[in-house]
Image 1 (cartoon, rainbow, N blue to C red):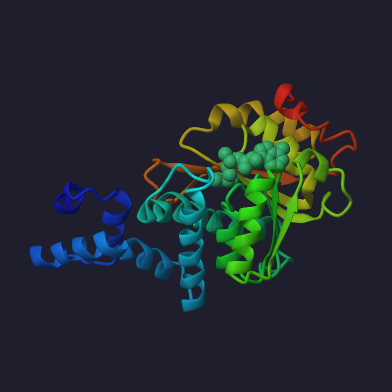
Image 2: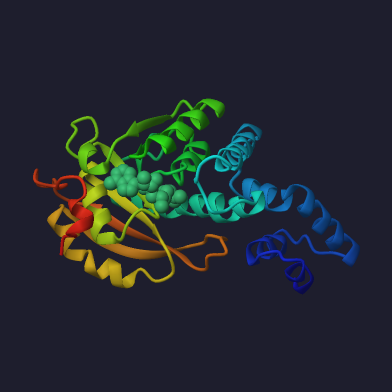
Length: 284
Ligand SMILES: C[S@@+](CC[C@H](N)C(=O)[O-])C[C@H]1O[C@@H](n2cnc3c(N)ncnc32)[C@H](O)[C@@H]1O
């Protein structure tokens, strides 16, 4: 472990190697180091095999990362510019949401199958976590909601390059989509990652969620304060904040969490408020 750490590998890679019992002689470790330098394949292969990805899904992840790196030279999609870091910080981080999404959804919707969920990724940016979820769960219908045209151009390109036929792209602000009958209260789950603090997120995301559905917000190590501040806003929108769950992401950001809300009643028609108002005057 210390040896790989000295070569600059993150905790995630070391943990994966430990899990797979990939340890052996110094020569074996050195050859692993060399192969990591060449292809980052230890992280990639391990992550993809842990998620039981088929060859097609693994290829889709690979093309997605290539596209991110390529387009990132022309537009600002992500601050992460190394292939291996994208694997750790973005792909692993997005996949880490799946177990908590699925167990919590089943708990509150025991009569519903997990096979055909409708999920909206609010503020999808470069497609995180939406594109990764669409690859991992080809039977789900994923809607990417993104307001910036440039990012939508990238998302459209990726959808075609990956032949993703379970993804819809909507270029709109969440405040507007929330009043469109095609999107209002139709989704089983709304996810959001790195978009806004919880008081704002509940107003952007909960109007899109059907009664019984969930909001799953990907958060950092300590979301307690913002979660507490969002309790009443969530109630105003027809939901209760269920809990904060630790998620087993291997990203080097440190502990990751998911804040979960359960929609219990219809959202009053006055929400979401006009574009920009949720951010300027968060509900309290
Ligand atoms: C910091 S990026 C995060 C992107 C991605 N979710 C991720 O984890 O990398 C936030 C994205 O949310 C989008 N966004 C912010 N507010 C929005 C809104 N009200 N409606 C739709 N998209 C929004 C921005 O355009 C931006 O692409």
